[in-house]
Image (tube, rainbow, N blue to C red; front, top):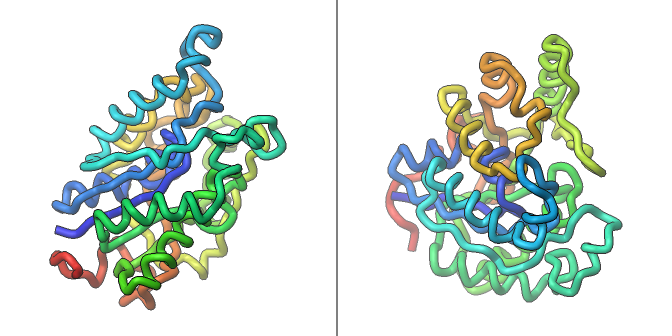
Length: 274
């Protein structure tokens, strides 16, 4: 058994970007550890009464994450202990408890302790731009890499480190499929999804058989499900075409044995590393 260790910014990020590889790892007998840096206190609220839910949104999203984790096969889930920073330039960014405001060395030490406990073979987080520039996604990237550097200086490192990536060809295909179905592209305040040139992608995992369960995991985050979102309204065959693969860039532990790799554990044995 090997361990997949994922670092995400908010509840629901895990289902959207890595739900397939999490379920695939669980089904293969690997341990799945999910670290969520915040509880998503600044998220938009759907399907619930805004006035009643806003004061306890952290509690609501924590429970939603627990339910999603059951679908995704999470063996251990921990929060890093920071507050959602909200979008760039908003007052929540400056909140003293926000992840964005946290000293990087402090956050890295918190995460390093969890990495040291698990000593995973595979670590996954975002790239430097956080996929779409959200301050918490960017900070999750910075924190993960800093924590790994701390442990490398002490003589330990995982076999592989990946950055989640969205191939530019995927964005082009998604735009085409949504236009065909007459639906608008996914959007949000201040969000601009950033594609990675296809030639930089090292790993593409086929999760077409898991697309519907991945959608179910996202739907477990009820407060975050905009009923008008393309995620909710697109037909099953379009969902599979768009969300049937998850892509990554191998940044430590390469080069990959094949290009692109079909699995995050490609080339690894099932034994625990010392």
